[in-house]
Image (cartoon, rainbow, N blue to C red; front, side, top):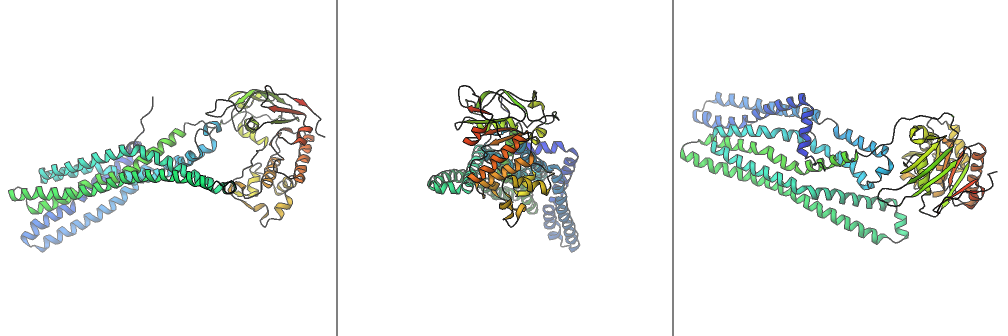
Length: 559
C-alpha cells in the first residue's frame, strides 16, 4: 500500500504541532497583527464621519496619533512573529540536508546504486530549496488564513452584504489555489527529473571533454542536451504558466473584489443602509481579508516542490546504511576465505561473479584474472567491505567479516582500485586518508616506494599540491602510483590491488614489481587483479573468473 504524499501545507501544520509553545506565541502575535491591521480602515471611517462632519482638529490629531502608533506596533509585531516562525521552522531542512548528504556517504553501496547520480545530487539540492517555502514565509502565510476569517467577520458586522461578497471572492481564490496545487504535481516532478538529466549531461561534458572530442561525439551530446533542455524548458513553461496564472488570477480577484465591494456598497448607500465612510473603510478591510489567500496562491508552487523534495529525501532515508560496531582481530595476519561468495548488481539478473570458493592464507599471493566483465574488480570491492555479497560468506581467520568492525577492517586492508580517485584537497591530505597519524617521514617513504619523489619534488607546492577534479588533471600513470603510495602508507595485513601496473611504462612497472616482492617477503597477503604476464607468471595461485569453475594453478612463488 502506498503512502499518500504530504502537501506543503501539511508539512507546515506538522511543524506547528511539534512546537506548541512557539505556535501559541505565533497565534497570539498574528491575532494582534490582525487587530492592529484594522486600525487604518477604522481610522478612515472615523475621520470621514467625525472630523469631516464636525471639523474638530483635536479629534483628527488624536485619531492620527493613535493610528500611527498602531501601524508602528504592527510592524514590530511582524518582526517578532518572523523570529517566532524561524524558531518553529528551526533548522530541519539544514539537518535533513546534512543527514541526506551523510547518508550518501554511509549508505550501503548496492542500495545506493538504485538511485542515479543525478537523482542523488538532486536530493540534497531539493532539500535546501525546500527551506524557503517551508520556512517563516510559509508559516506566517498559513497563520494569517484563520485570522483573515476573523477580519471577514468584522467586515460582516459593518455590512453583511459586503462580507458575503468578499467571502465569495476569497472562496474562488482558495479553489483556484487548490486546483493549481493538483495541476502542479506531475509537471513539477517531471521538471525536477528533467533538470537532473540536464545537469548530468553538463557534468559529463565537463568531465569527459577529451573523450567527446576524440570520438567526435559533440553532435550526439548536443542532441542529448538539446532534447533534455527542451523537456526542461517545456515543463518549466508549464509550471511557470500555472504560477503566472495563479498570480494573475490573484490580481484579477483583487481588482474585481474592489469593484464588487464598491458596487454593492453603492447600492446600500443609495438605500440608506450604509454611509460612504463605512463603504470606504469596508473596501480597505476587504482587501486585507483577501491578502493571505493571495500569498498562499503565490507560495503554492514552492510548497509543492518543497513537499516533493522532502518526500524524496525521506524515501532515500530508507536506504540501509553500513553496519556499525563489531569485533576486532588483534592477531589477524591477512588470512581470508570466500565461501560460496557471489554478488549481483541491482536490476541485473546475472551475478557479477560467483559463487566462488577461495582461501588466501596469511602471506599468500593470489592473482585473479579473466575476461572483462567477469567481476574481478567487483570481487575486490566485496572483500574490501565496499559491497556486501548477495550470497555466501567472507571469513577472516574463520570469523565472518560481517561480525567485524568495518572501520577496523578497512584500516587493515590496503586497497588500490582500478581507477584511483582523490578527494578535494592536497596530496598530503589524500595520502593521510589512509593513515591520519602519518608523519612527514612516512609520507616521503611511501612516495619513494611508489617512485613519486621526483614528481613531488619537481612540483612548486610539493606535498601541498592541490588535487582537482579527483586528480583527473594528472596522467593515469601518476594517479595509479599515487593510489599505490596511499595503499603502501596504510600497510594493511591484506593488500587488494586492482591492475597495479595498468597504464604504467616499463620503468614504473618495475617499481611495482619490486614493491610486490617486498610486500610478499614481509608476509603481507596479496590479492591482485591483473592481466600482466609478469605478475601472472610469478603468482603462487591464479584464479580465472568466468570459467565453469575457478581453476587454481600453482606457479613459482615470488622471489
